Length: 527
Image (cartoon, rainbow, N blue to C red; front, side, top):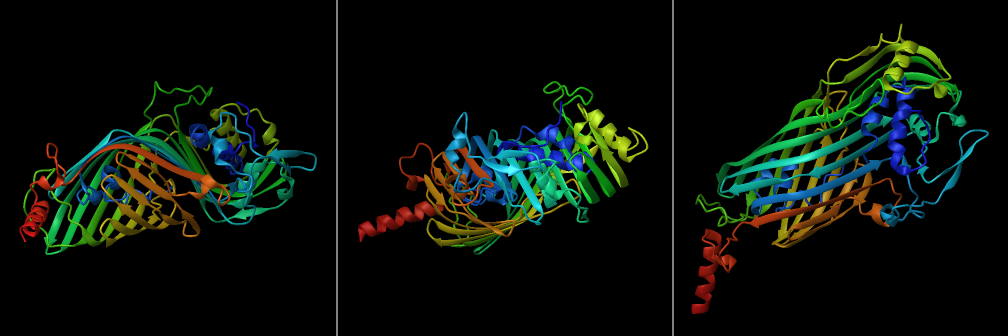
């Protein structure tokens, strides 16, 4: 394939940006872009904190299974798409979300002078400033999943397919070259010294999860639960690069001078690196791994607890004044062992002439050219050792306050944990979500401080068995510049505690709460 360094449509921007970084930081990042080019985080704040979230709530804190208003939940299908960055955008006065629904969308274009002799049309704009640039995109498909809760215990099983790409602390000039090309002349003949480490990584994998949650303490109104989810991970492909520092200059559009660079990159893809033939689906699994979510929750209940054992459908939901949770989420990694290729630069220096005009058609040729330019020969810097890519790990704290019956206010903090230099960088978030809960309807409006600095508003609704929502409502209506989107929907089959099959009325259930209610009503009639 011939490499191109310009981007004409917003959907391919991430690919071009990462490709630039690979060439700029010694052309190493192609390993990721080949794997993840076809891929298009918010936290689903409008839904995962609900008492009706069922098996989905376990992704934020596994204890939600036993504290749920549901005793059974079956997820049939679900999709969550999240794309975000703080560099490239569509202007809000030119943006219409309906264009994305068109088979042949046409976006307004404007002219950008790329070089002294060339002007090109662009559909996007950029925040061209010296701030570091970040990007995060995830497509998650929720497969068949279920949970079952009875008395003090709950079990869950979940399947999903996940594709994630992240870029963290990317220098602004690299982002600019990625958008406009290497012949963007205003940045030529400038020596850039980037001493702050930056990284990017991507992974595609399947996930099979088993969850267990249990009440571990009950005393009066105090109620403590603990839970864990263990995940088996099947890696389909992944790649990374991590740069400790780089000192370089582009005297012109086809020459790069590297004064000093330290970094590494790796890939494991369903691709033949000698001819770019795709080996999928014959050689699907490139690595395996393990992950976990761990959580604990304290609730101060509305009433004292009961130790009575109920049938599953009869058990009552014990409401609370407030709930405090703490969890570790997405702790784990995929260890890629098959079809791996890595390259590492240690105090590398050199000059690469005419690199944009070279016919680099395969991954092997690319790696050989980088190794030959900055090492002793075409294989000196290359190896085929295994490597691990860590999941987007984070620590999360949740606080849920009951305002009145069926009305709650949730506040949640998600703070990323970078466990090693190959970790997918999860965005930090602080959210405040008021919600109204009913058995067959729910409405939530999450307010999120994304990366602790970008305010966002969302909307989520549950209509019995169908859930739809977004944590970034402005991206659909042009309320601000379009830097990405967030959208999720699910189809479920939930069964609510206290509602038994074969009974005409919910109050006929033989649990303590409803029996007391029925006796009270009978007493009033007698009076």
